[in-house]
Length: 161
Image (cartoon, rainbow, N blue to C red; front, top):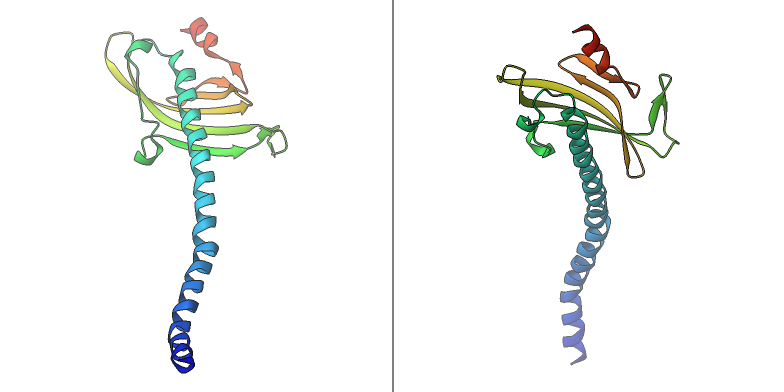
């Protein structure tokens, strides 16, 4: 009987080491990947929120805002590009100890112009988020600057147009 147990133990010892090896691999590779993907999903949700906020800032510069159809904020389809920076650029120097998040959004909007024709405009928006407040640092529509460093220049267009 003792010989049968030793024989059984020797045969199954390899299965025990395989089982332990699989558990170690799971702990080393799968669990950290899961944590990273959760962090990436958190950043992606912030980027989607930044995309939506950018649309809110763009819409006030359109002639017919009710007709606006924006590029999708589903970042996987490639219609809109969002870049995330932690920190802010102050006097051409990047600072990351401010607790501020900065996003750059590139997208497009289809809306009617003053004559009722549907026109596509490409836009670039640079937003900053502090807590739950959003600030438009730069707004550029079809290569024309509307906001720069948080200052709204659109009134100049109205004066000279």
